Image 1 (cartoon, rainbow, N blue to C red):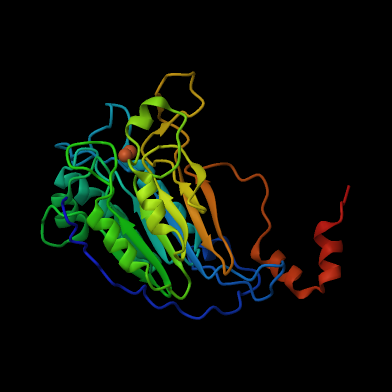
Image 2 (spheres, rainbow, N blue to C red):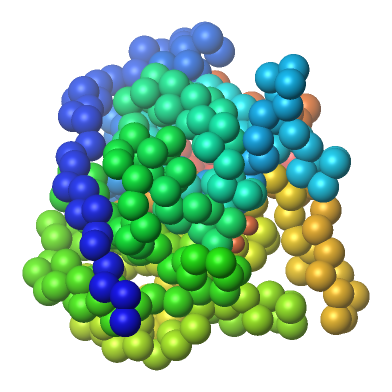
Length: 341
Ligand SMILES: [Fe+2]
Ligand SMILES: [Fe+2]
């Protein structure tokens, strides 16, 4: 048994300015500002307590002589979709607490690949005032992952961590097996995880790992699944883990593991066609997406955001919302719910 030496990083997310009222008549340029929590609760659920951007499988290759990233499979521009994801998140102005990348950050563990993706993501994350969390994947190399992404000393132990996001505990677990693409969790890691989860956190916990503990209908991917999942289920039983975030599959999917919802974010690099004909494993340069994870008091909601520039066909601006907020609840139904045609 190889004992884990968890990083055990305990960090707190940057404090956020208290939300205030949104000025009516905001211009589109205001979209670059962080959006504010609604002044008026319009529905039955209070606003989310935390918001996390969940990205996965960037698969950067090393840098070519002209400074650009080498194309994955000589076809996929891995950098452009990460730029695109960061641009979309920044433009949203959403109050994102953390960006979580669930592994396969570099395709071959090359240090310059890590530096390139880091330089794109770190600057953008800093502008958003969010925490940045990197999780190991089977394509990653622990030494370069540590030195280039985490900026800590190189060593070979699993990269596990605990991050405090204003009372929401985010635990990252390194499910990689050096030299292989399938996933495992060592007995040492399980013992560490049990100890971490032995006391509940204020807002509960999220677990982020690369190999998701859900079935896949793609036969070849089952060879690369997380092994001995029952041992993980035994550790998670009765804990405050509210959701599991994963990657690896390159398509967005959900499942339930030991009673805990699992959400897999598709890749930013290329996606795997889960609707491909039987017995095939097909990757395509399209359908890239990221997830937004809204953490509410009583549930966690995962929403997929396609990456791309799309034509706007309809929009209600913040001034319209402000007018709705100013109405009584019955008048709101008349103004916005009643069929107009
Ligand atoms: Fe991957
Ligand atoms: Fe993977």
